Image (tube, rainbow, N blue to C red; front, top):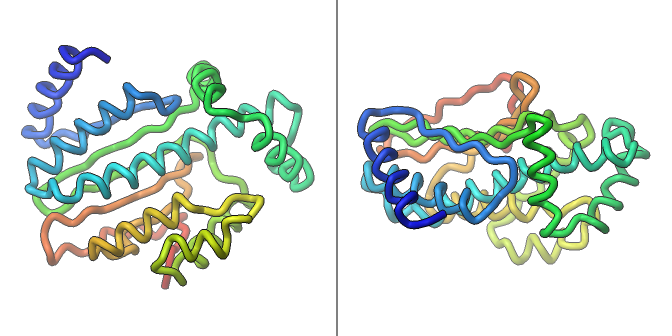
Length: 234
């Protein structure tokens, strides 16, 4: 993306933010252009509410969640193309092993094109006010029952740690996935004094939704949507 186009995007973006509009990014695969746009959206929003110091944390969290959503969509396509039923435990184990063996970075952009053709996307909604920045990362495929169980287990394990390296040492050889991205998000939030309860993952309208709230004011109370939400902690 050239600089002139990026400047025009930023000009339109700042106007939309000043008008209180919801900002949306839709992606089919993580690319450098998507990352550049995301970077400017986060920068402009945090400047608006004098929270620029949180940029690296917010950017890292959103990028991790977008990558997770992109991988989930690609994985569905991969299973389908290899004649595997993602809801069947035997097929799931076989498919995950094959996916990890053959899926390389250069293939993700190609699969991103296939995801677009199939209407599979990752959408990021930035809903902002003087009290809170609400971020929703939506990928329009539901996690499977076995994935939900594993996700709950990962969250439960992550909550026992405040040291990412120690978590990696304990779970880094997990063949199903170490959940390092989730651990990173939780630890980054806690390091900034942000309640990890402001981050949750759930299922809504046949989609997987991750919600992250960044308080602007100190006395902000989390807007918890408890329907179909995977609780991170009690």
